[in-house]
Amino acid sequence: MRQLRKVATALVLTGVVVAGTTGTAGAATGQADKASSAAVCSTAWGSGTKSDLDSFAKPLTNIRTGQHACYDRMVFDTSGATGKVGYHISYVSSFQQDGTGTQIPVAGGAILQIYVNAPSYDPETGNVIYPGRPAQTLPGVNITGYRTFKDTRFGASFEGRTQVGLGLRAKLPFRVLQSGDKLIVDVAHTW
Image (cartoon, rainbow, N blue to C red; front, side):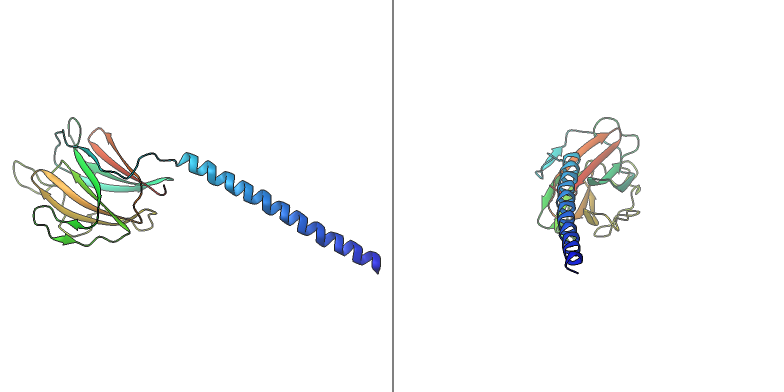
């Protein structure tokens, strides 16, 4: 009986030691995975204002979004634009419609205000090309389940530029890229 207790105690102790070792190895692996993941998703983008207004663009034809491993993405299409698509992007404490100053509520912990130098209408005919309506969510954009994006609002298309409010989970780093006739805004999931 005494021998059985010794074996049982040894097994229990071994189990505790093994579990402890496994837990430690698992924690170390988890930390390594996080470090590895953090290295892959490392961003030096910052959260300061980004602007490049020296440009010419055709009218805005579409706005779409996508999810990536490290960031959420918003793409502004200006089909047929030549040269760079101008922009001015910054965090704001409240989103106010360009031209009127009317405050538009935007859900989330932070608001990124995006101006794109591309009107939502044809400047020659006045015909609407991108059907955004003030204070409404962006047409055709569904951000349900996104990690960083929480809300989208159309502000205005005024004096040759279109204004969008992007509600985010928190104030996070972002970058701006150009690809042909597209302006791309990526907002990181973490710092």
